[in-house]
Image (cartoon, rainbow, N blue to C red; front, side, top):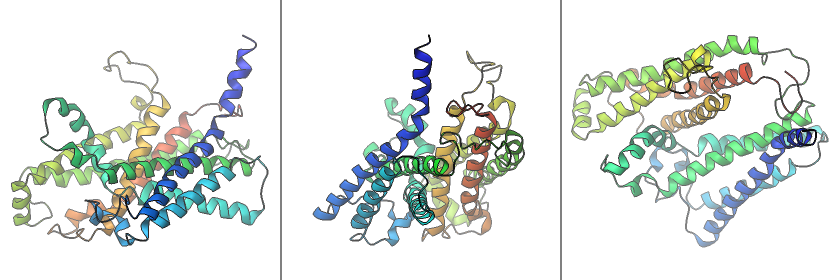
Length: 356
C-alpha cells in the first residue's frame, strides 16, 4: 500500500504533460500529409473534390495555396507543441506572447474554422445512421456520407483540441498556476464554484433558448407551415424531403437544449430516479463535459460557415428563417461557457496540486 500511492500520484501529476507530445505527433502527421499533397498536387481534401465546399470558409482559400499553407501551419504548430514540453521556466514576455498567440490562433482555426457545418450535421444524423445501418435505413450510400473531407475536418478538430489543451497547460505553468486545474492558491475570482454557479446559469439559459428557436422553424416547416419562408420554397423542400432532414436536425437541437439545462440542474449531477441501474449515482463530470464541448465547437463552426455561405440568404424568407443560424456562434460560445461553469462547480480537489 505504501509503494503504490506515490506511484499513482506521480502518474496523475504527469497527465497534463502528455498533451503537448500528443499534439505535436498529431499535427506533425497531418503536416507531413499536407506536405505530400503539396509535392504531388493530389490529396487536398478541401479543393474541387469537396462536395460541401460552398458552405466552408476554406472556399476562399485557393486550392493551389491550401496544401502548402496547411503544411507550413501544421508543421510549425507541431514544433511549437514540442517547445511547450521544455522545463517550466518562464520565458521572456515577447517569446511567451508569440508562442501563446500562435498556438491559440492555430487551435481556433483547426477546431472551429476548418470543420465547417458538416461535423455538426453528421453528429445530428449519427444516431439514426448507426442504428438504422443494419436495417438498410435510411437508404443512403454511406460512402457519400463518410467522406475524405469529413475525415479531414474531424481530424482537424481533434488536432485543434489537443493543441488548445497543450497551450493551456503551458500558459498556466508559466503563469505560476497549477498546470492541471489552473488554480493559483488565491481561491478568489470568477472561477470559484459560487461564481461559476451564477454566471453559468445565464450561459446555460442562452445555450438552451437558441436551439429551441432553430427547432421551432424546422418543426413548423415539417408541419406544412411556411414560417419565415416563401410557400413555394416550402413546397419544393417537401417534394425533395429536405423538410424532414431539417426536422431531424430540429429534434437533435431540442434534445441538446434539454441536456444543456442539466448543466445547471440537479439531474445533471445525479442520475434521476427513473434511470435504470444508475438511479441516484453521481454523473461523471467528463460524461457531461466532453460531449458538450464537442457540440459547442461544432455549433460555433456551423454558425461561422453558415454566415459565410453564398446561399445563406436563399431561404426565401426573412429573419425568422435565417435568424436562428445567425445566433449559432452565440449558442456555441454560451454552451462552452455553461460547460466550463459546470466543470468549475464539480471538479473538486485537484489531484495534481491538492488545491480545492
